[in-house]
Image (cartoon, rainbow, N blue to C red; front, side):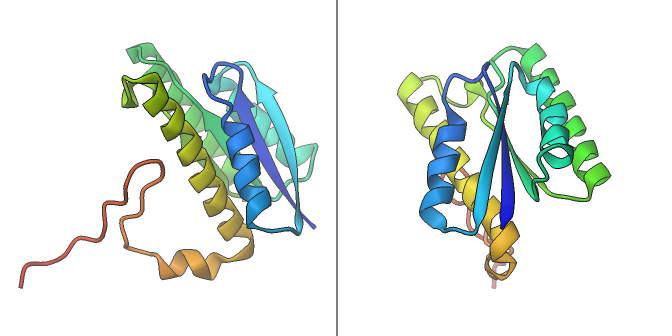
Length: 157
């Protein structure tokens, strides 16, 4: 049985872990979800490392919602670097899913974006573990999480 780790924060304004968990449970079986919630986005790399080392997960989904300030963007970048380092150190994937508060001015739109992006990243995580060929079939299609897909670049003929 595979183990999927979900690391999320109390700083986020939407329970993205709940959305991701629902999406995973609707996709299939053969896995167990282990969740760790930390205060802020810069705590996510350690939470993912703990999920790998202490909980034996095969993959982590790191969920966060940086605020609007420039400082928050900097913190998100630092967290991202920590997540990259952790994934390389463990030689296991970490699917990073951040939703910046500045991506939507309307609270309802922001909530929808956060839930949708968390769900779509969760499905990508599932595919990484169980159906990597599914991801390969979609290579180069310009798929986006949370927003409409961009589609592939078409050359003018």
